[in-house]
Amino acid sequence: MHALDCVLPARATLGECPRWDERRGLLWWIDIEAPALHCFNPETGADAAIELPENIGCFSLMDGGGFVAGMRTGIYLLDTHGRVVRQLCANPENPASSRFNDGRCDAHGRFWLGTQDESKQGGAALYRFTNGALMKIDAGLTTSNGMAFSQDGRYCYHSDTPKFKIYRHTYDGESGEVGPREDWVSLSHSESERGRPDGASVDSEGFYWSALYEGGRIVRISPAGEVVEEYPLPARCPTMCAFGGADLRTLYVTTARQGRSAEELEQYPESGGIFSMRVRVPGLVEPRAVIGQA
Image 1 (cartoon, rainbow, N blue to C red):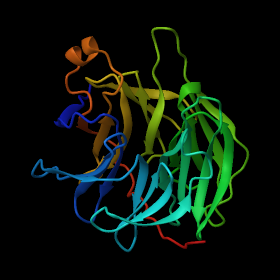
Image 2: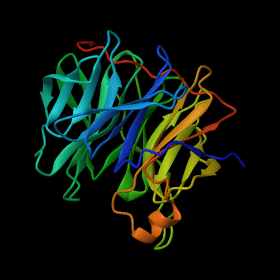
Image 3: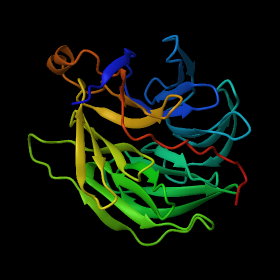
Image 4: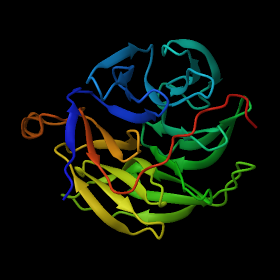
């Protein structure tokens, strides 16, 4: 059994969106509730935090430097130091009860991201931001999560965390168009088993790695939609995983401690930290955003 060990005892309220910067050998990540963008150096153990003016749900590194970020009130351009430069697009939903949540770029530099409906009424959606315009891709969601693309470019995936479901769409990389939503994986759950699909990443064999929030584990799902491997970690709420290291064979996992009981935090004191383990199959280089890319 592989072990996920804590490499950064960050005590994040809601750690999320780890992104490996293969050019600089750094792991970028966020604390949604702080709110802040972090830069972790695995070689030195140093972690630097950049405070932000509002909740940040996801981001991608940009091809020419800097970041594009999905925040509460919209999509923003950040400079190379993580400072807000300008808003690129407003949140089309009500930011009083909605914020951008999980997202990532496709291989063509388009930024795909979903929202979280904090009222839990199913008003969240999945969007694609490209060429300065925001297009709705899927709707009727509660918490859009788990955005990823198959390594062969045939599918895009996303989940609705409270519904315990991971969806799949056929995907055309050239046009960015997707087919109808397909129920790809439905996770079993009960009163005692509440592990539900949060953030995710795809490895070089096309397997989808999902962090099960309140499930205390990471699962590896085959292209056929079968859970083939499980990896527990000493935190009940993993939020997302990413492949890093020079060979992309180090799996990094962010976690949360928000809303957890005192008893749970005593049992899992490293909750809110970043964990890692070595894996057999490497991941893929994370695509970078190209603002204005059609």
